[in-house]
Image (cartoon, rainbow over all chains, first blue to last red):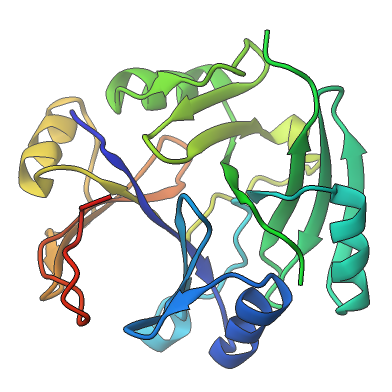
Length: 118
Length: 132
C-alpha cells in the first residue's frame, strides 16, 4: 500500500460564495481559475464541497485543519475582527493553538509550534 | 488577511487511539511524524500529517466522525483498494470514475471519511496532475 500524499481535505459548506470569500479573502489562500473551489496552502489543498447539492447531509467538519501562522494570537484577533467564531486559545506546552470556526462551523486551528522537536 | 504559511496537520477524531493508530500506521502504512508520541499519534502522508485526536482531548461527550473526506493519493486506486479489502477494509460503493479521476470512498474504524484518489486527466490550464 503506497500513499503518495493527501490530494485534498474536504470542507463542507452550505453557502459556496460565503465560504469562498472566507478562505480566499479572510484567510488569504490562493485558488486556481480552473478550480475555484480549491484553496491552496503551500502543501495541501482545501476543497470546498456542497454535500447537500449531492443529496448528502451537511455536517460541519471536526477535522480541525491546523494552519501554521507566524503569530497565533495576532491571527486569532484578526479573525475575530472579521467576525469568525473563536472557540479558544491553548498553549499545549509545545505549540500555541487558536481554535476558530469558519462560517459553516468547520473547525480550524491556527497553529504555531515553538518548542524544538526531541 | 492572516499569513498562512502551510497546513501543519489535519486532525482525525477517534474513539480508540490504539485501534486508530494501528489502522493509519499498519493498514495504511503511514510513518509516524517526528513529533509523535504515545499521547500524540501523528502520521506522515508525504505532504501533510494526520493527527489522531482522541475524544477526551476534543472535550466533547458525544463522538462525531468526520464525514468530509480526506483524499489520499495512491498510484493506482484499483490496486490499493484490493490491498485494503484484503486487510478487511470495507468499501461502501463501487470505485467512481469522475471523468478526471478515480475515487474509492471508505472509512477508518471510527467512521471518518477517507478516499483513495488518483487524478489522471490534465487540468484545464494544461498542467499535469500528480507532478508535485
